[in-house]
Every structure is written in C-alpha cells, then in structure tokens.
Image 1: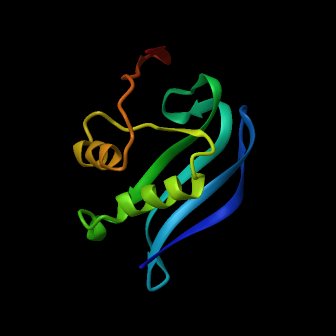
Image 2 (image 1 turned 90 degrees about the vertical axis):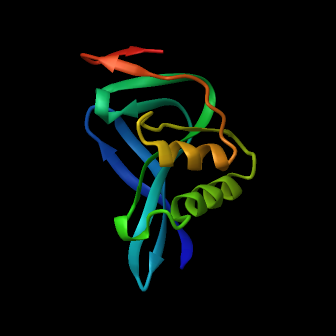
Length: 130
C-alpha cells in the first residue's frame, strides 16, 4: 500500500468558478482504496451539501470528501492519508477539515492526526449557523 498525490487536478465548478485541487489517494494493487481532496490556499470554500460558501479571514488549505473502501476501514487508511497531507503541507498554511458530527470514527482519526475542534456548523434551508 502506498500514498500518492495527483497535483493540480482541474475541477470546473458550475456557478462557483475554477479550482486547482489536489487529489490524495492510497491504492492496493492499482485499486484506489481511499482518497481525499485538498483545496490549497483559499479564503473561500464552497460546500456543495448546503450550496453555500464559508469565508476565512486568512488563506487556509481545506480538506474534504474523504472516503475509504468499506473492506479497508479500521486499518488506518484514513489516518495515513491525513498524515501524508499534513506532511505535504509542512506547516505552510492553516488546514481546515470538515466532518459530520455523527461520524465518530472519522472525528477520532481527525483528532488523532492533531486537528483541533473549533466549532460546529449547522444549516437549515441553506442558512449557515456557526
């Protein structure tokens, strides 16, 4: 198993603009078993689930849309991808990661990798509450 990164994956986001994101993944025998994305150095992050943006006071790297194949869960794949991204960042920018509060294994892995809980964001009818 190895970690890889595809630099500068070009995404066209309707009504949002263009973005150069990084796609990080692990594979086993050329089958992707886990992945996640990073939007580097941004002050605005669009969240598809709520069709709205969050604005940051300073540029941050935003981590999002992580997935691990169910056959590989509870084997440290998610943590290894997070650690790889953290090392790739090398302290250049603040990193932000979103997680569903009900996904306890994900939240534990995020904390185990050194992230600190800041606050909960909730939304109803596309209105963000921070």
